Image 1: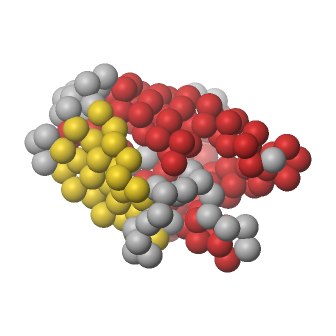
Image 2: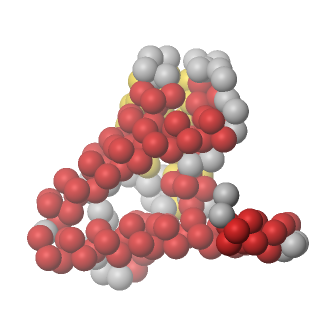
Length: 175
């Protein structure tokens, strides 16, 4: 580890825990801002279809990388649904979704986003709902396959599908 990184770690250690968590969530939010800004730039220049195709491929790769890194960092050895849902809950995507519901049993997991920050921003800006199903499905499927190739991903609802006002998307995971 380089000298600067060591100094940065020490600086962060000196922050109060709540401030450190605030900083952590700020950086997650910034990651998603950059994702959105890149998407909007590609969409403006080349259209929604091209931007979506690029987004799908990026998030498929990100799903594999994030599953591998989280499993190692959080030292998760099991391949069961509860462990999968624990890792999924710790992804940048899930952490960015402040309004979500997560359920986990031995055989089934559910992640439901009740108020999507990204979709809300698009709607407020007059851009309309983004048909994110294939992007999110690619991400979640690659995350699941990296974690345990036997996990199946089922989209219960996600734009462009019609959805109730209180659910933007709902994903089910089973072995």
